[in-house]
Image (cartoon, rainbow, N blue to C red; front, side):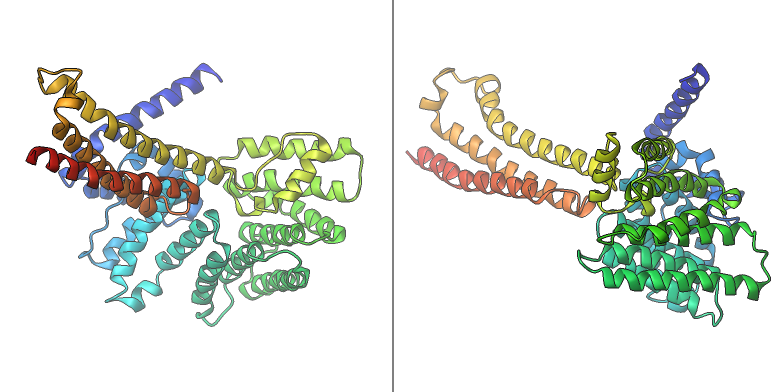
Length: 453
């Protein structure tokens, strides 16, 4: 890493730190919304999602620290500007692999929209913001392992655009998103459904051609080429779920994707650079090409995957057995279909269990500390014998409080980190909570008994 790069990173995190230190005071003073308006007012948030994302990146330290706060009694028309920016910030979290912040950003937007929809349903559901929010919500469900729910939500978005009585590029795009989610929700031995999915994707490709003709678009239009690339890659992804992939379909669509490369840019190009070499490597393995050739494709994929800002992208979510077979075939490190989620789950479980264990230990140590070092008993060292009521009462009190605190920690964890904590970790917390609560009652009763004596 160059000195310039190190200096830039240090400056970035210094500014992030400053904003985070100032964030509590800004929020208390109610300046967070005013600052959001200031940052958003002159930005190009309507010029496409990649442009909006670039604008957010330019002010990343601010947006990392200061969260969007909707004004529930504001006019929906006025709030739209901030909502577009909030969607862009959510996308920024997504492409920075901060899926925890991504989910919370999407939930915050949803709370506002679902409130406004109670009194202004038509205007909200006809807005682009509603469609963008639903797609983001589907992405959250997809990342956190609910593909069937994600497919239903994306299908709803597709229907919103279908109501316009004419074929739109958005309708084609979200139909592709629905199919992408749907194939992940299938169980094993459902090749007949995957065959139907492949037929639907071929129809979608024809719909794109018809759309181009009806709208008078040029064949080399970047938007069309990008959409065509994703449809081709979805056909390859569908083959990954087959018991035996169709080599001809893989080869045809990889070649089709290559023709689109010169017209793809930004984050979509990053996706191209990672996913096409991966599917090439899988194709090469199934064709039984030389291992050296397959290894070259796989290494190109790994290199692009490491450089990509967002490691959790839909075309990478293929059965792990394929990735295991490929890694074993070329004798290289294995890639994971959802590495970011696995890492986040490990961190969240460690944090949750650490809090529970610390509270449980403190519940035992605190009475000893109070009795031996705070309360000046003349019988130091014999307090447990001669001052039983104090010991029983303090130990009963701390275990009771520990039980309540652990319950509260579990409640907050299930609220904000749902789907991330393993059932075994939750069960462990329940057992400790139950034991401590069960211990508190007889200890306090024993303390009362000693006092009566």
